[in-house]
Length: 356
Image (cartoon, rainbow, N blue to C red; front, side):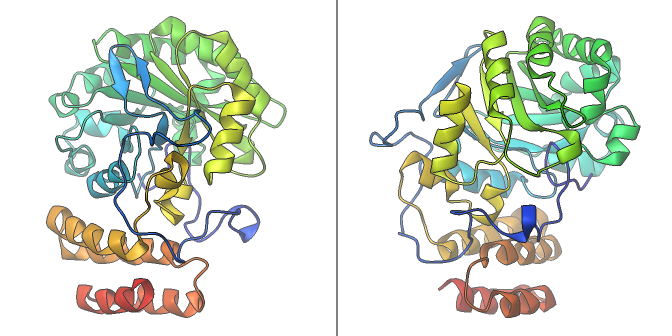
């Protein structure tokens, strides 16, 4: 599954209107240093702090979204180093997990980092419960259920955001997974069509079925990523339940994160696309020193080579370098050269010119 994230797909080279929001640019001068998962003592607003639920304590409440095609083990580790309080795997097919699919197994590789979360998608309660009980998920502290994906193929199968239109089935899925003994969270959108708002109702359903946390993407499926998130809908979800609510959608920088928490009362924020264009967004939000793009690129390249081999590393880092050169003078030419690079050595030379 090569969707963009746990809530759906977006072409990597585009954002709403084709323009990156303020603070989301890729390259440029950054102060050097190492990120930390701990909240900086002087992060300013006091909004960013540890989060505890169901016997699990996160070092902070700024989370990395599950993003298919991006949040593999190496990328998650990098974001943890930059401050992410919790990271999620790419979304994993519950059927693929049970059918012993090798590609699915690769998605669930993890290290000793803790805490850590995996995201599953599916619609069959029995299959999902069995998937949650898989040995491959044993190392994970939290299993997230995707009920927000807008991808047509997923929706046609009755999965992802289709479950917003089948609440009885959604409840059965969550309940079945929760009975397996793992911590269960749910990520969902506020509705399907423009004008819909089932955020509070669905959050209550999740809580009642056994979820210990929910993430609310403040847009309906029809809008995908267009426009501002509906802060009031997220606030309604927060007010409807006792479990923590994580707010998702439109968080590109610290100002956005503060606005999201202030307007919704949510317990934390989830960063998605901003973490692709600028992984240091976590450092920015938490007030910790931010390493340069070069200080991130080359270790990530080496880690991807070690974990996934030369070919994967080449393709993945070409893609990431194209994200990270946004805002750099001559970005279009750099991107052309990046995507033409046919070896790790050529990619390194271009990256050294671009980031050093």
